[in-house]
Image (cartoon, rainbow, N blue to C red; front, side, top):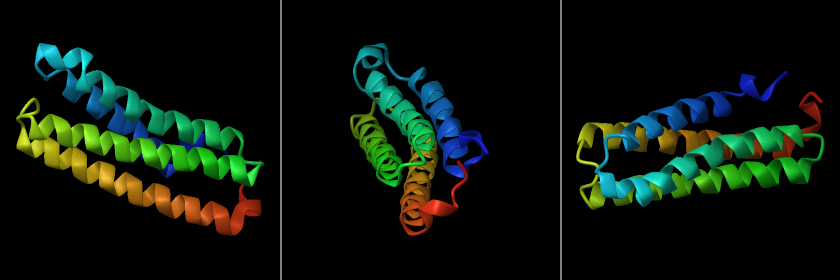
Length: 125
């Protein structure tokens, strides 16, 4: 099994790409401010899933990186909200779509953390 088989990784990959594309539509001045921050935090969600999976033999390390992923997802939501609240992101449909997908991923991550905590030894090495 690979981290690429994890639904949370696939969702985070898709969101990273969508967020990257969204940032290209933002005003120029945002390219070095919120756009850069939201790209980083969304990439961290994905990367922490990968790093946690690489440490999956060690329950505490696995969960630690999944929690980092969850907190980076929350950070990404906050950056998205800032962009919308400041009118740098004007597309309301895109905003709501990304927000909903990030909320969905957060729930999936939380459920995955609970599953790892309950049944750690069932994950393949």
